[in-house]
Length: 78
Image 1 (tube, rainbow, N blue to C red):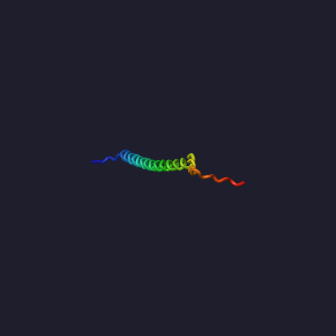
Image 2 (cartoon, helix red, strand yellow; image 1 turned 90 degrees about the vertical axis):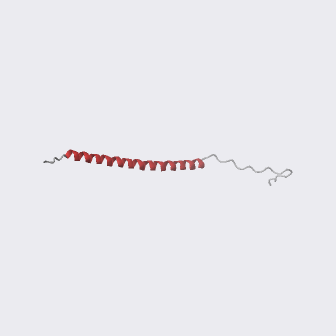
Image 3 (spheres, rainbow, N blue to C red; image 1 turned 60 degrees about the vertical axis):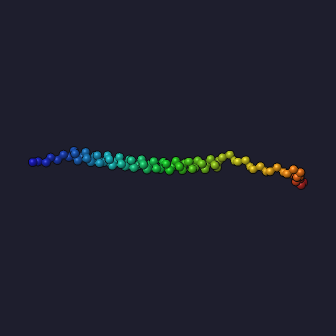
């Protein structure tokens, strides 16, 4: 009885392992990119909020209360 050796089967098996390894590597990079993109999005939103607060229209100054009835306003000295 003679056992035949098929070198092509070994090559096909190796190719499958290599393709699976590359696929796993690509999926790992995709997951890492998603995490980084999420963090960058949060950072961008924070920067945008800070910029909006910094460059927002100034709030009007508080108004002074009206003088009481019968009170005289100080006259400026020359």
